[in-house]
Length: 472
Length: 93
Image (cartoon, rainbow over all chains, first blue to last red; front, side, top):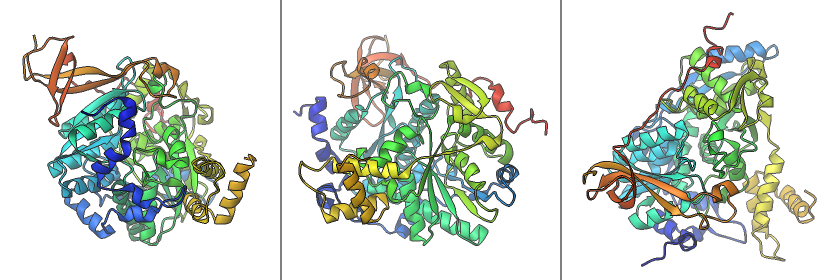
C-alpha cells in the first residue's frame, strides 16, 4: 500500500498528473529553463473549429455582446471633450453554469470522456468548479471539486458557499477544506484514489477552450461596429483568461491592446487563516494575478498553459470599492445584474475608455452570474460583519482588509498601472533561479524568456545581466 | 442515533498542526488542515462520533459526524444604504 504522507504524495505529483491527464509534460522540456509551449498546446489535438463544435454541443459559447450605451455616456460625461470610447461587454454569464469558465471546462471534460475516464476532478473555489460540474453532468461523468471554503472557525465567504451549492446542484461531490495550499495534497490523493481525470484550470485543454472567446470577440466587434476592438480588458487572476482570449483574437488576426485588470488586495496573504475572510473578492485579485504572472508554473500542472506575460500589454489594479460601485452601476444603468468579481475588468474599462477617443472600442471580455451569496449585498454585508468599514471617498485610499471605499463620484475611478518591466524582470529572475550554479542560460533559454515576457532577446539578455549583477 | 442512508456532513483532520507545509503563514500553521464532506451514512451513527459515508462520486470517506441533512444558508445580506446612493433613487439628478 502506498504511503499517503504529505511529503510522499507531493513527491508523486508528476506521476499522478501524468496518469490523470494523459499528457507527458517531460516531452516538451528543452534546455535548462525553456520548454516548447506551442508543442504543449498542440497536444490538445483539436482545431479552433473542432473546439467550437464541441462547445456548441454542450451549450457553451456563442454568448451575446452588448454595447454599454449608458455607462459609455457616463464615462464621456467625466472625460475630456471628444474622449470616451464605446464600451462593449461580452455576456459570458450566458454560458450554462454562468461564466466563461464553461469554455475551460468543456474541452477538459470532453477529453476525459474521450479517453475513457469515469470522472473528473478539479481544485478550485471559484466559478470553474461549477463549470466542471456542469459539463460533467452533461457528459455523464462523475465529478469531484476540492474547494478552499472555510477559515479555522468554519466561516466561509458567501461567494464560495454559493459555489459549493452550485457544484452540488450539478451532482458533484464537493470536498471543503480550511485555508492552506495543502489543499493540493488532498486533491492529489483524490486523483490517485479515484483515477479521475485532472480537469486543471491550467492544462492545455483549459486554455484552448478559452480561445473561442477571443475569436468571438473579434467577429462580434467587427459585426457590430465594422471594425476591430482597440482594447480588450480581461479580469486577471491565474492568467488563463487573458492567455486564451488573446490566442483566440490572434487566430482571427485581431491584435487589440490586451489589458489585464485585478482587484488590489495588497497586504492580505492568500494562505493566511486570519486574512481569509477579510477580503471581499475570492478571485480576479492581485493575490493570484501577480504571482501567476511572474511564475506561471506555480500552478497545479508541471507546466502551465496559462502564460499571461506573453499576451498582456498592460496590467492595472482596481480597488474592491471601485468594482462594487461598477457592479451597482451595471445593474442600475444597463439593467444587467452580474458579478461582482467578473466586473473587475468593467471598472478598469470605465476609466480606460476615458483616455481614448469616442470612436475607439473597449471590450470588457466577460460577465459572470450573480445570485444569493454571490452578490454585492451578500459580500458587503459579510465584510461589514467582519469589521471592514464601508464608506464613500477616494478609492485610492482603500486598504484591503481594513476598508472598502466606494468612489464618491464616478470620476474617482482610477485604475493603477502595474510596472510591466518589474513583472517581466521577476519572471526572468524566477527562471534564472532554476539554473544550477555556474550554468548560464543558453540561446534557446533566452529566446524562451523573450517569448515569455514579450520582449526582444536583447532586452532579455540585458535584464539577465542586471539580475546577475544585482542591479535590479 | 442517525440512521444508515441519511445524508450528512462529516469533518476530518487532513493534516495536524506540525504536519503542515513549510512556509505557510504562522496563523494558518497554528491550525490543523480540516476537511468537510457530504454523503450518505454507510451504517447507523451518532453525532460527534466517527462515521463513514458514501459521497456523490461514490467514494468512501470517514470522519466525525457533524451535521444531519446539511443545508445551504445563503441570502442577499443586509440592507446596504451606500448601494442606494449609486445610480439609484437617492440620485437627485
